[in-house]
Amino acid sequence: MAFDKKLLEIIACPVCKGKLMYTQSNNEPGLVCRYDRLVYPINDGIPVLLEEKATAISLEELEALKKG
Image (cartoon, rainbow, N blue to C red):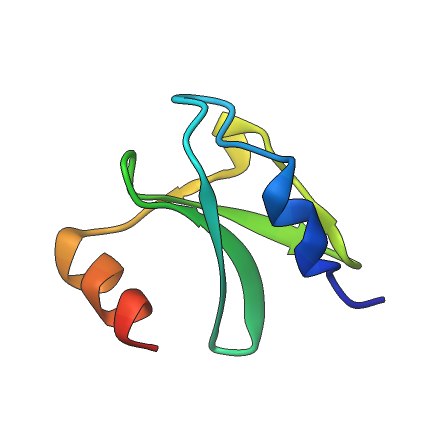
């Protein structure tokens, strides 16, 4: 099941309530919070917006994701 990108208009980072950005790196989809530098996984098209399931990324990794 694919992730519906329309959800990005209504969901927010559970930590800071900021906007999320869709990303797919290493064939693993995720939602990135640019402010907290957290990547939330997407499992079977469903975003897992739990802080304990998020992966912290470095500033360099964030910049690479922004560039695509």
